[in-house]
Image 1 (cartoon, helix red, strand yellow):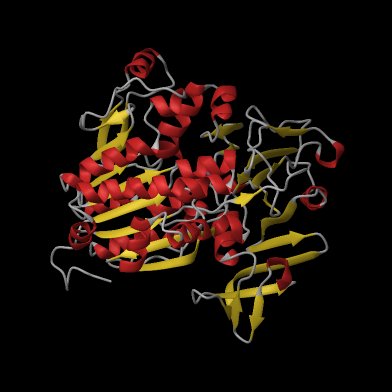
Image 2 (cartoon, rainbow, N blue to C red):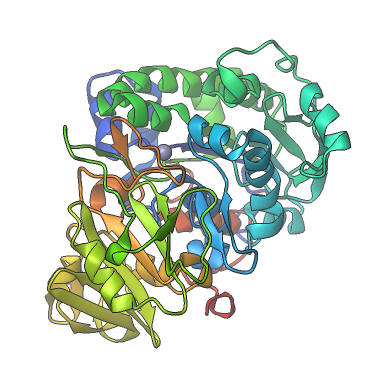
Length: 501
Ligand SMILES: [Zn+2]
């Protein structure tokens, strides 16, 4: 790792986040010669093919983890939706276009663009922490972008609404340069304000073609010492058309990376000038051909609150917020947690349930239970030791002597510990079995593939570093980049203890 002592001027950093790209899909594309640029980066640097996401392994939680170094318990961001007990309502950041439509585009846009960063994100972002070191940042399309500069909304149609509505603010706080299509652009690069087609996301420039063009313009100018460019369409394609579509898209995506490097003077020159990290935020699990949709209503045969307008009330004891292949379950005063868990674990496609219990995290599957907390006991591959009681098979742990290895649930103890112990997580978190999904908050389901669970398929990500050590966890990205810029040790893997219950 470089530090200011050895290198008075750390190289600028380029961070590429490729949403939802499975490591095996990327490797296959590289092997077949269809992702030559990403292949060259992996070869020139170092690649980790079994790095891990957070739990839930879902975009808002994972992208927050990447730029804060915190698990959801520390960042406060759990997924596309969660139930806010204080406001007695479900907060939706939005995942699918249908969610936007059914919960109202302005409300979701407000939550996604404004509220998530401004109100709900507990932890400082990389943009904020680097700014304190005198390092400026640029952000293209990445959803978590809070920073020290104020940016004015640019899109005229929205601007009109913002000026009269109570919902939308006219500014957001971001890094020095912030680009999100036609919604925000700190400088006019000649790429904005075009007539888009294909709905709000495309009109607002939420597409990879745009991200590559802005990224190329920024690299051409060597604009800022830290540049984050986000590509999301590989995730979206997997949801709608399956992993084979993601596989086919990798050629295009690789072309976008090549386009950016070309603008910076070509691969050799960019790697001379920059340190580079390329990483995915989570994996993907394809569905079974049939019966893959798990319904979480009617718990214990009673009325269960589920959906965008769900509320706990005197007659509703259980509120469920599905988040893809995970779900957050909130209980009213009279609900019995044990019985609720038993009911939910009895449904085909629900793999396991986890909850906090008097300083422990308890994980349950039908007929088995494991409880754990940091303490004296076997060490995980990252070197943290855990006190365990119960059935270690619940999490497919292989324990020999004083070491433990993970099987189906990579980095499970650290990820559950960093997620379960916060009021936002609810009273129970569910994780789905491979092949199944628990759906979206509005009751819709993706067609081909989904993610969010603790299982390896959703949880494994690739991590490529050139001039920077590739982190083995997505929570390692922020500490790695801070260390590169001489910030000393950063608290990446630890949950911020005062923020949890
Ligand atoms: Zn997704």
